[in-house]
Length: 423
Image (cartoon, rainbow, N blue to C red; front, side):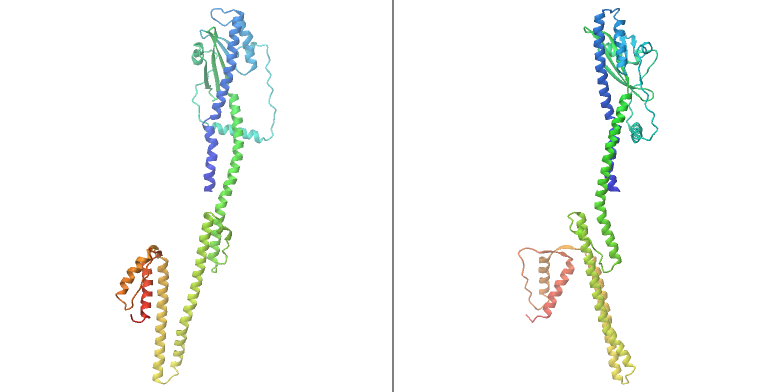
């Protein structure tokens, strides 16, 4: 589960971070602003040409015939709301206000009624809700759609009347986006007025939801593939370890260690293979130890059986022997056998202590050449025989306990000296 969690966290964080920073929304807003600006530039050029054609500029205002010929076309070609201002900032035309006097009929078909369960619709609703929950809040000015227009609420119009195109992003009280672009109307480098194009961000929000829905579909496929690969990866690690654990449990129940069957893992070239080889080696060592214990127990039983048999025979015979000297001999035999048993028990105890001590020994690197030189110098002065040490040109190192190794060689030297002739 930890492996699965570590692998999935970056995958899960990616869409959350992407949606939080509104990268797609920023792209769509820039694209929509560019489209509005293109329409606005076309409109302002057309208005300037129409004004020149009619030649009805009165008091530096856009003439009525120019407005009547162009404004309705803007309204019924798109969802953009257009407002025109004279050079003094007075509102002189509004496509929203002219709708009730328009001869055009705008037809919008109603959506079909469908009560069936739709995975696509539910996914879209989920993505929309999820996006609204985690998206970074936009700190935007509030869009005001007052009946009485106030130019102070639209500073971009003021900028346009100064000859500069200005884009502004707003949101209403419900958090819906509104995009506005103010463009100056110029005629021979003179600003005749301004056009304010406004549009709801509903299209952007819908495109964003559609885009994020597709993102979630792709993310779902990636997530499924990642989970499958993570499970496979985790199982490739845990399954061999589980099998090793099961084999260890079997070994704990089977004293003969006949259940170890992990040869396929021993040939792997990774850490699992190293673990399996170490486990196999440990098992073999345990098997050898068990065999040695069994042999040792048999030897102990054999060694103890002889003196015990002798004691039993002597004790049974002593009651039947009348001769005092023979009784003394039998008692002597019993005493010798008891001493022999006592020595055997002491030897067994000493062997057990030695075995336990060896298991706790601290292995270090030993310079065996220097150790032998020191040992030979000490023993040459205490024994009669002469000791020759054939030295190598380089020092020889082994792993072990220095005191125990010195004791081994000291025993070998003294045993050799005791069986050697003088000199």
